[in-house]
Length: 167
Image (cartoon, rainbow, N blue to C red; front, side, top):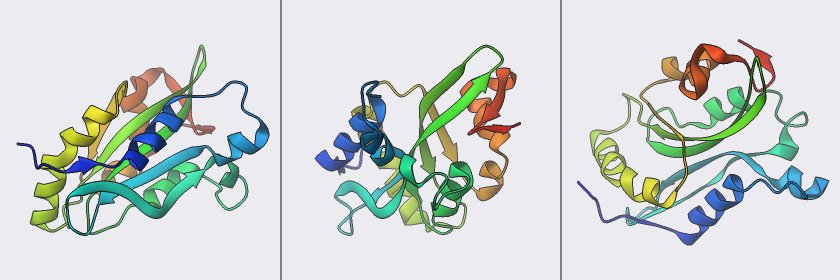
């Protein structure tokens, strides 16, 4: 069921910036890259927009952000739904990788109407996010507390670290 909700150009632009890693980016550009960002429905429920102020930049890590995964989990509203992009950095025994993860946050405590609108609008944003390999629907903090749960989504037992932290 489609809700008729539109994805704003700003949201698509943020996704494209996160998807394309510029090897020749200078330090300033790297610091401004988004590590994580939340998206929400506009007040009139017609558009998917950036959730103002709900982002983590690479330049924040080590300064205002100690652990990007923990800070990301804390950004999620306890009683409402969101869509999120999280740029996960992880290592397997062979290599270091980065992958974008699309997360649909729908906590049990969110109002039923919100869960229904977000669920029916999810395809609209997913269609705009071409090339996403990992999608994760999360229904409560207990699903997020352990970073191992995200590691399993990314590659199962082959993953040895997530965000530099051993599993």
